[in-house]
Amino acid sequence: QVQLVESGGGLVQVGGSLRLSCAVSGLIFSNYAMGWFRQPPGKEREFVAAISWTGRSTNYADSVKDRFTISRDNAKNTVYLQVNSLKPEDTAVYYCATATSAWTQVRIDAYDYWGQGTQVTVSS
Image (cartoon, rainbow, N blue to C red; front, side, top):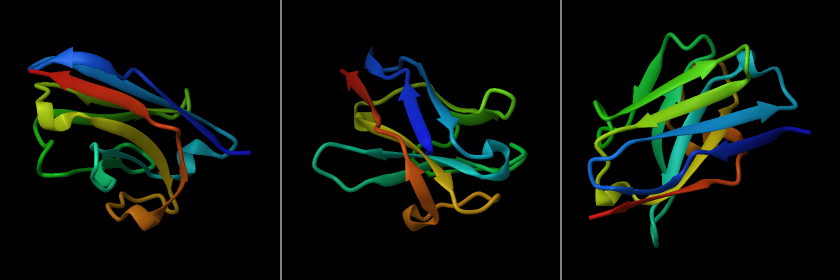
């Protein structure tokens, strides 16, 4: 049974930072690319960042480039999202997901397993 468990969300002021974590079990973590998505209130889920199976290749949405950093630790079966310089528009539920391949993917339908999400709220 594949499980993804996110943590690290919370309430933060504009300009603040958080580190989101996603612990994965039930599959060979190092075989798959991983991604982070988010769903703002009243909006559709959107791509945030992705990382390849080795961690050497990453991909970011334009809206988060230079502020967010995705990384992974294959020894710990965990993927991270460091979020810096937060803005009110970053308020959303953040989800991690496993890709169906080893390479970075931006399409939501390229991911098959999802976590339950962690709330990030940025106050102004």
